[in-house]
Length: 467
Ligand SMILES: *Cc1c(COP(=O)(O)O)cnc(C)c1O
Image (tube, rainbow, N blue to C red; front, side, top):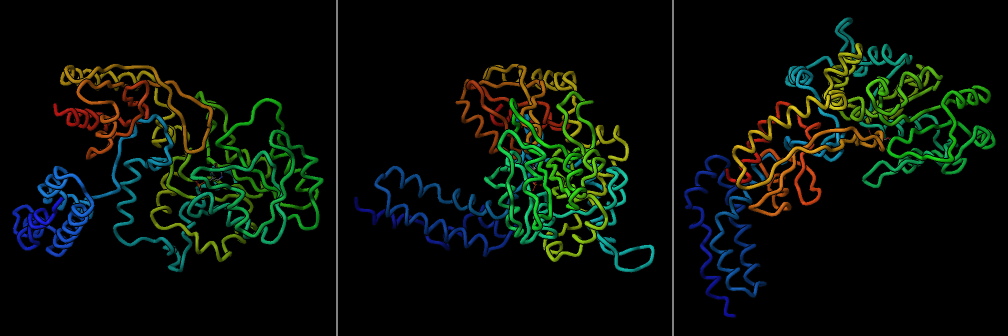
């Protein structure tokens, strides 16, 4: 194929720059930005012509040049990270940002972070203050612990605790509690980064108190318990409780530390869920330090919260890694706000989005589903089949792995496109709707859709169907 004609057909850069839409974009953003995209798409086009063997493809690519340039510019000028609608029914969806922050908390955060704040300034005496002081009194009041602090996430909390107490020393942990937390990260690998030597005791399904006791020697500095948040070993099993470990720790003068995973502060069995150990109970059982995530069941910002005995927390606060792992002002203020809600359990259940979703009644979900489906049926009856069905939501984020909560979803079976394209189009929408495809139908679980998002869902689906 003689390609020289095609190359001649590529418009020159200065001619392309005279395109009206591109002139407009040059004014809106910058001429330089537009010029870079023009050059890049031009180069890409040359390379495409060199490689391609299809005249039709080449001609279409040349005629599409302005669109390709506009899309390239858009990559740099539009927001990449944005709000999405979570129709998956997974309440703590790690890929979708885990816990949502309430609007009232976000409003207060905005006030604090858009100006200066007393992040590390004690307003009472005018001296340097601590960034933990804003929430430490709240956490200790709620959990019963003597002291508290926070770092960037729970993995960092585990790393920091073991670096502070167990560097080059032995830490005893049960084989049944060596957790992989997703993204192929494993808690034991994080622990080893602290320089601690993990001494694994027991077996996958059974660990006894005497297994820990037999492993204790002069090198032992920590007895560690890890809550197996994201999996459950059932059947012929046995594990040692925190209280039992505390008894053993006292006998040998070794601190007991618990990584409790999800930081639940309320007894979820009261709300019809499986029992999850609470932070308060762990402290009451005598654990010396407990750490947990901020953005799992607590429903707060990403953080790793450490609570426990003051002498230990004081030591951690002085460790150099604390500086490397320290939370910023966004996290500090969000934590203060979230813990404010937990001063009153009813307020927490009512005001924290994660708790609201767990607790949302099937009536409310059905109501939202019916409202949405009525409107959609009016506009879309020709292009798809719509229905309301039973489904099951889950907690996610590595919490309560086998728990399923009854819910309602709307299902869409398109006539005018494949279900796979519907899924893709909704995912590519201005406000993307992320759902699931089951039995060739697109499914939106309404438990994880906020009431004020129903209109967005309605409008987006209509747009995708061009209705
Ligand atoms: C989730 C989890 C972690 C990691 O917490 P992040 O806040 O995600 O870093 C550590 N340990 C356990 C037991 C967990 O469940």
